[in-house]
Length: 135
Image (tube, rainbow, N blue to C red):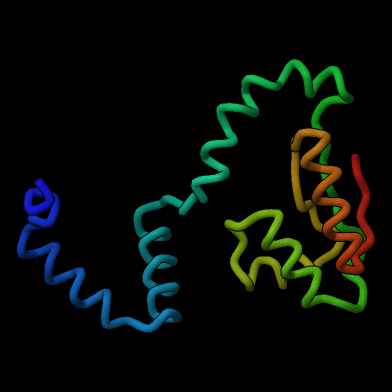
């Protein structure tokens, strides 16, 4: 059965060979180019798995004060730490997007997030040196 899963078309095999020759930076550029061309974005598995749970917990979140928006009002002096925190909070952010958020404050970090997620994001950003506001 293992042999069956290894069988791919010659076209795919050639593409795999070419992609395996790329550097990490080139792979990143390839992913970005494919996302733009196809109009999709890569979603981390953990986020995709959390989405159905969030839908099931919506009434509980409404009882706890509803959805929150996390706004970074000032990135502070440790911008590198804040950029790392932003990318940890939202893995879909590119390095340039996160850097742009630190330079263009106030910036909306999370919108319509559960209260516990908003609180976690607020703590991470404050620990990195940013000034944060929950709305």
